[in-house]
Length: 316
Image 1: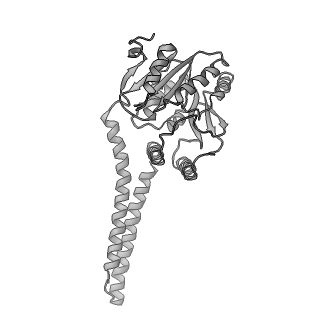
Image 2: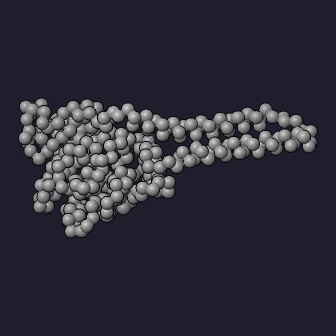
C-alpha cells in the first residue's frame, strides 16, 4: 500500500481535481492507495469536501487541526498516521505532477534506493525576485550547513517505511522538512520536471512567509549566524581599540585634542548597532530553544474520519 499525504489549507477548489487525477494514476499502478488529507485550519469548505470524500471512499482519511499549525505540522501529522509500505508527500494544487508517481514507484522497487525526490528543472512562472532569493538561499544554506539541500527540490517524494520511521524519530518542535529529509540520510535520487502553475485557487505562500521559512531553515541546520555574531563582536572590539590608541597617540604627539562629536556619535552608533545585531541573532536561537523546552504538541487534532460528523461518526 502507498500512503499519500496531502496538506490542505483553503483548497476547496483543488481537492476534487487532485482526487480525480490521482484516481487515474491509481489505475496505472498495482498498488492500493491510502489518502491522508490534512486540513490545516482551513476557513473555506475544505473540511466539508474531505468529510464527503471519506464517507464515499473508505481508503480516504483526513485529519483536521483545531487551527492553522503550518505545513510542517501537517506533514508530521500525516507521516505519523501513515500505514503504507511506501509513503509520498504531495501538494494538492497539482504543482507536484501525479504522472511521475508510477515512475517513482518503479525506481524505488527496482533498485536499492530509499527515496525518490523531485525537483523543478527551472522556476518558470515564478516572480523573478522570489526565484533570485530562492537560489541564493540554497547557495547559502549549502555553504554554512553540513546537511546538503538540493536547489529546486520539492517536498514531493516517495519514501520507504524505514526512512519515514527515521524521520518520525526527530520529534523537534521547530521543523524544516527539506533539511530533515536530507539529515536522516538514506539513498535518494531526484527526478526533474518543468515548473507548472496551480490547478486552481491561489497560493498561501507570500514572499514574507517564504523568507521566514528560509530563516528557520538556516537556524535549524547551521550555527554559522552565531559565528557571525561572535565575529561582529570581535571586530567591533578590535576596531574600537585601534581607534582609541590612534586618538591617544595623536593627542600626545601632535597635541591635537579629540574634536569628536561627529566621530563619537558614529562610533557609538556603530558599536550599538553591532551589539543589537549580535543580540538579535543570539535571540533567534534562544527563541527556538524556548519553544523546544515548552514541549508543546506540534499540532492538535479536532476531527478525523473516525468522528466524521457528516457521516454519522463512523467510517471503517
